[in-house]
Amino acid sequence: MATLLVVDDAAFMRMRCSKLLTENGYKVLEAENGLQAVQQYQQHKPDAVLLDITMPEMDGLTALKEIRKLDPNAKVAMVTAMGQQSIVMEALKAGARDFVLKPFQSDRVLGTVKKLVG
Image 1: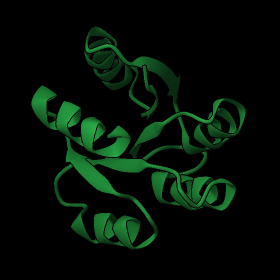
Image 2 (image 1 turned 90 degrees about the vertical axis):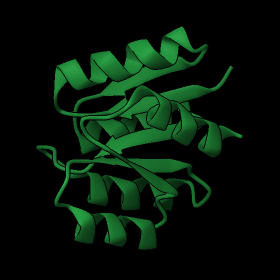
Image 3 (image 1 turned 135 degrees about the vertical axis):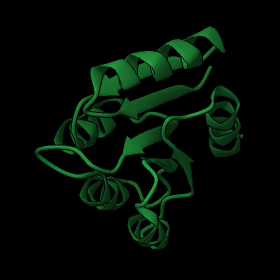
């Protein structure tokens, strides 16, 4: 069973995503900002990360770069609202493997996770 780290500053988004992933057989860890995401990644080495872009304390792009410093092979997908295409492109250049648009569709999230963890 793959372990996923869901990072979003909105508690309801984390809950919704965690519920979906848990129901589909994944173990889920959560973080509410980029700083926590980096700490959780260091501590637990999840198989993949779903990382929001806009968050307090440390944004998703900075967190992505920090996680990739810890683990150049980290499997990260960005979670983004419409209108953040330039940031998504920057994230993909920085090593993100995919992205999911908010409000997310369950099948899109599951498809992205399957792509990340094989």
